[in-house]
Length: 236
Image (cartoon, rainbow, N blue to C red; front, side, top):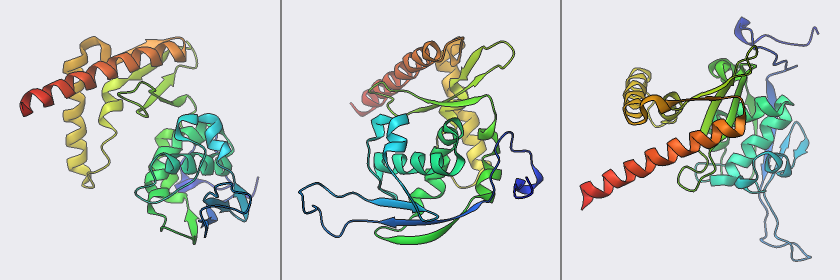
């Protein structure tokens, strides 16, 4: 127990790490094909141990089973992040809660090609402390229009009731703004826009994750269809 650390003296719920610094290495193939004709893939090591893409793929198969990094990494970048988080945090729920901000903080910043660098998690964990809540779960919409839209849901430990505030979920996804005050103002506007559209449907509740997510996807899908129709009317 003496080796366990406390992040900035804040309680991080049940998350216990023996350290917050890791050595990470990435490698890209020199050639497109191996000798047996099989396509080679990018590889990742953390503290000298290779992390395989099947780890993230088993949890979120729609990202595919390959690795990539950098701004244009696309779905392989999400799989890289999820697989790395599973290895580091050793808890699937925590990994799923953290892999989106982890990708934005680290995976998107990795240089293209081969690299070796230190990964320091202390500030990252402090700024994402809310995602470590023991009863918070990261789920994803899978419908065509809102594919890969993350929805954070909370399960009340006493009643078992599951809730998803879609207005909050919609507002939290704009990562382009760096000014904190402007970002908060923009989030308030986005919450208002969504609540005006969804009315009472902005807060989805139930006692089954699938039921809550099915309803969330229906509302989100309807919202984006309406938004798309409005954009098209303005254009034409």
